[in-house]
Image 1 (cartoon, rainbow, N blue to C red):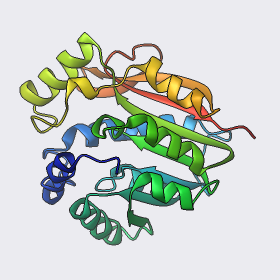
Image 2: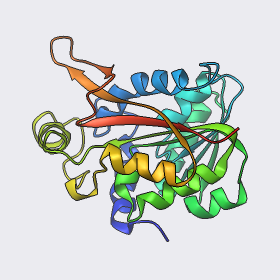
Image 3: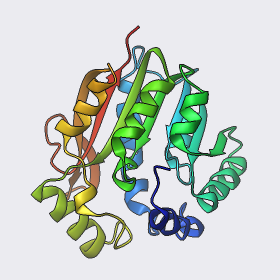
Length: 235
């Protein structure tokens, strides 16, 4: 199975405080609005409304809820049972209907081949032993003409300094020990995995921090730290 038991345990331990915007997952809370906006911009009609979406590695449901709130029909897949429990409770409290599944990604996508308009995989592939296998599974789940959006951290000196040293140990936006630098993924690697699945790479962009306003935004070319990449299956 394409999972790291240590990673699953680590994220399960964060479940209780997952939805605290000032808690150990505050980094994700802070970047979530800009990444959801960017995902929507990658779609042919620039709208999630009415789309059937698969969120791979959904965790506690941060992105899944944001997409459901914009009118998407969302399925979230993860293997961390405690995070999924937190996701279900929070969605119910917000009166959002999201189908959360505890399943192995590859096996789930095999049974749901060609079923989704949009597949997202956000801040997940750097936590599994075989990230390219996740991209392969995601491509399989797409409908013809469907859109895949993945985000991760760049294996670069800047990625190490800001993604680990600053984010985890200085600013404490992320729980210390969340990331391993050797698991970070260069944009060229991610693009190669997408193209190997006959996907057309559409765009990439970085998520950057603006210290003066203490906000995050999208940078069209600075993908040195956290970045997103989109691709489309053949129509």
